[in-house]
Length: 141
Image (tube, rainbow, N blue to C red):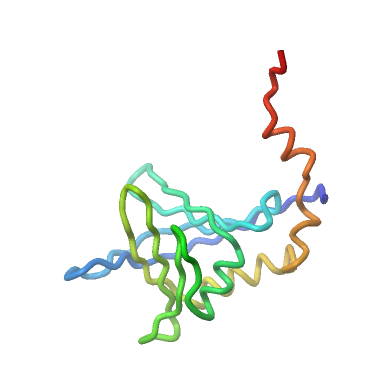
């Protein structure tokens, strides 16, 4: 486990795609924190004060830049029409959203995460004792 934690942040604009309407730009903050080295957070701006956060595997982002990836709530795939774009599809009980994003911006962010934690070295950043302590109930009476 490493003690020198790092948090990366990058701002992007994803286009919300909907049938029969023009794309709507949505501000997105991408985050990577070495305290959870396997994950990426995408926080979507939903209004003046609102954000909706989605957490998914860093490997899913990497795989989605190259081909269809994901079989759950988050799916990522390159655009067939535009090699500079990827689609990010989000599904939840409250709805479905499809975004188009810059493949280069996502790849640049991913590269920044690799500069901090190389793929395959994530386990070196995980504090198992701390994770177990947070999972265990504090009151044992």
